[in-house]
Image (cartoon, rainbow, N blue to C red; front, top):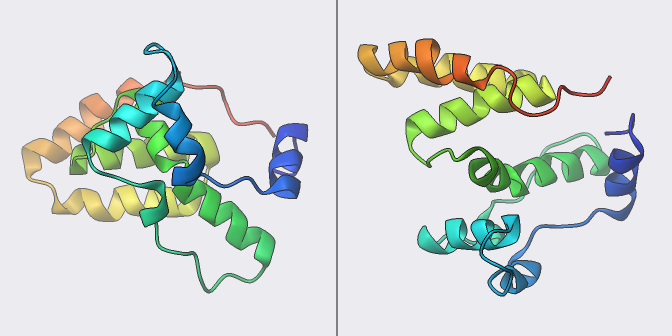
Length: 141
């Protein structure tokens, strides 16, 4: 995040995704990300405040970045139309790996995919994950 002006601003200002600003999303026009996010969260009875706090990290800045990663997780579901099923979560983790290169994303996909039935695992690696190719903007270096 420190390599881009946007990331630097986010780390400096430390905005949070909580239910307070989300309440305004219900009033946004129907074809907006905010309205889609509010609908996604409301239809599942999710709240951004339900995420557990991040603990046991070496620095306050790293803890904030990990917290932000948790808070924007559902943004990714909305942006890429992924369900909150096991298959949707694993596909999302593969997308996060592509975008963030964070090792925990790889470990999540590699470890949890073995809990799938063989036909589900095959679909994940032959259909869902390959379908991610080219989605989003490549990470900045």
